[in-house]
Length: 132
Image (cartoon, rainbow, N blue to C red):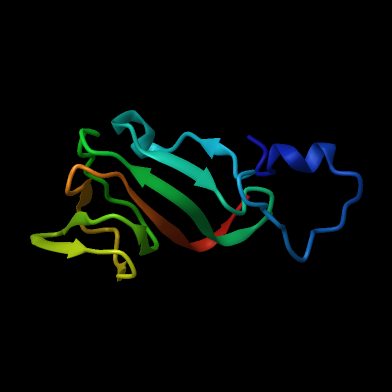
């Protein structure tokens, strides 16, 4: 299997970009592990090759099923709007607009929207090695 992102085959040059810009309202919605539970992932830096961090704008709505996740790396969350109940290991934390959480995602973790309102948050998955 090739370890090259598909976009590399269609690039106009072989140069790796120094940056990517994702314009407001133009972040593509992609499928990730939480999609099966109803979570919406908007990729904020999809075109950046060999990145150590994957930033997403996530939306979790009331009534979305609760997924339980565990993965390598590190994870950072910053609440943009709404309130979210977050379980990390055996702890439960309530996060409100403006709150942030940085944690080791090897611990089982899950989240849910509170107050019958969708919660929107910046979620950054940090890898130990660059993703392609």
